[in-house]
Length: 70
Image (cartoon, rainbow, N blue to C red; front, side, top):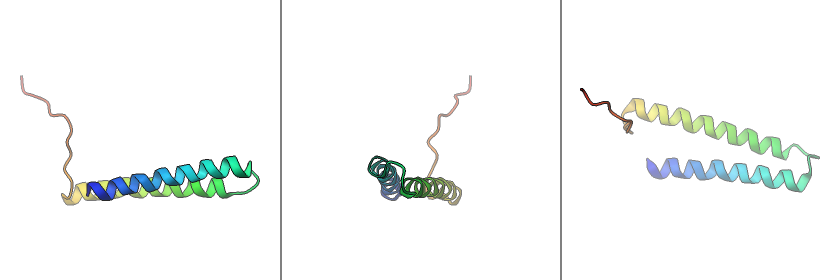
């Protein structure tokens, strides 16, 4: 599961890098920057929903802080 989520993060960062590349290269004359950012947002939302689903199914555990009883 860690590998899948790590790869998803790399793809999201790659999409962000391609948007930056298109922004510098095209100087705003095409929609490639907007398309790359739209893909990044879609991937981020999909990853978030997948993590919620995986937690619900018990595939991953939360590792939050626990409160100690006083």
